[in-house]
Image (cartoon, rainbow, N blue to C red; front, side, top):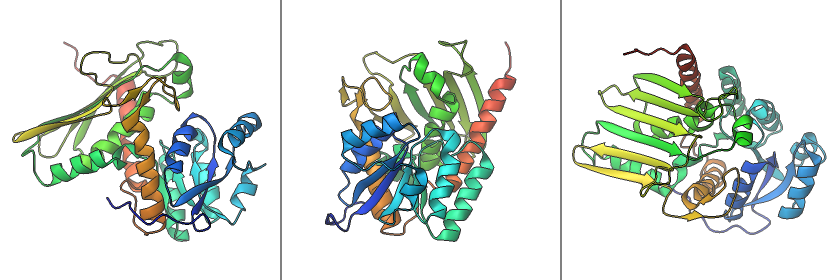
Length: 332
């Protein structure tokens, strides 16, 4: 994964605009500030008070409208950081304005929206990259390389685990744990192992049963070679045990095993949507943005996870939600 280039002068840096200034924008801002080849040139948010506050915090221009930001010829790329129900509209507007786009996950709420975004980006010769940040860390790249080279032998089982408590207010803002966290785990699994042959899904509303939102999910993926992958996520609880599974990818092979975790650096400060800070998680935004700027925009390289990958992931998310609602399971 090549992301090292000579630092650009201030004049030659790729100018970035943010559409949306909410909690996730804090993580993108921090990541962008660590990218020497790009600079934040402007922001827009439909909430004027929030936009004014961010403009002051970040010392950046606030645009009075989305059109004004997109009409600024100095801005070459935008980050779509709004709620998912406006991703499609904002991304399409940016592409039509000739901007490269990085769009937060879930990329869109409907399959046809992703197809139209991909078609427009191709027609315009622009990059439209899903913000699938988990896979851009050097640790994840190394894990994929080790798997592809057969370092662990045959891999009968893998685990993708997420246990971080989310309060009721935050859960109410999200579209459900399958779309919010399942999307992360599914694109990560796809990056490491490819296309599964089948899937079973279970969800629960354990902590906030009155919300129209699932707060726990379990997906079991069967691969064509007979191996299994287990994807579990919970907003109901934080793992506080000795070796916590806050976020863990565990790969068990016939010739070796490995584990990738966020747990090596944990700070007692809030950033983005979480009440504490996981250093490895925050770093994924920096690596993702560097790849978007250096490899995709400047180098013309496709993202590690494309819109077509996002389409397949959304297909699986929709199927998982349908199967979980139908309670397709055997009772003993």
